[in-house]
Length: 313
Image (cartoon, rainbow, N blue to C red):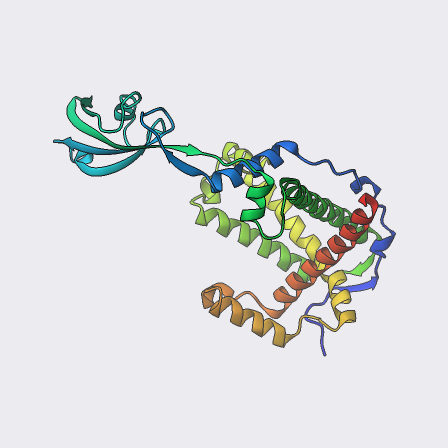
């Protein structure tokens, strides 16, 4: 069976020889993020408790009468202080009690209001009993906090592994011997430029009208062309990374075949709703490069993840 693209690996550097010590830094829990997560739980299970008098932050139900249509309401709920309904009206509500009737002035118009109900939002305490009642996998507050810290640790490991994978890939591209097909490199560069241009156009930013100042603000590069060159350079590098990934897939019996490419096209059209014309350039070689490059990165990231995890244990 012929290869889906022409670039070939003559000798591959063993990524397991890479030094990952700089990525094996101790994990420290983010206590602020933990507090925010616990607060989000309390807000999710917040209760509304009836109270007699309006204070800022209360949920007030009013009946309004006015010549202005906005304030002609049989019942409207207002979160006092948020300013979502009418800042001017809300500013006059604190101090009113349930059953009070007042004629207020809003925007120069009279608005007669009657307070039908006042509620205060109460956040529950995360006691062991509360946690046990509302969660299936944890039974105490301590276990809930540990669960969030474990989630932070997992995110940390994945981020470190992803950074390590990029470093390993950079070393592999330098230390491996790869016979790169120049047509494939040019094709990858052109594809990278085209994708970037299309993304900008879809966001209403045609490159021909973009100033250097706008490009610098959007990309951090001095001009749109400088960013395109950088982006396209990454695309060119993926040709070599794809060749390395293809060798791994080949050894695993999972190389990107024409059959797999056609199945990928079918899913993109039928399941993702991508138009046929948008897939005209998604050829077998393009598919093979994409799948192979992604597999190489994923392989390096999973290897790095295991190494970093072992060092942090």
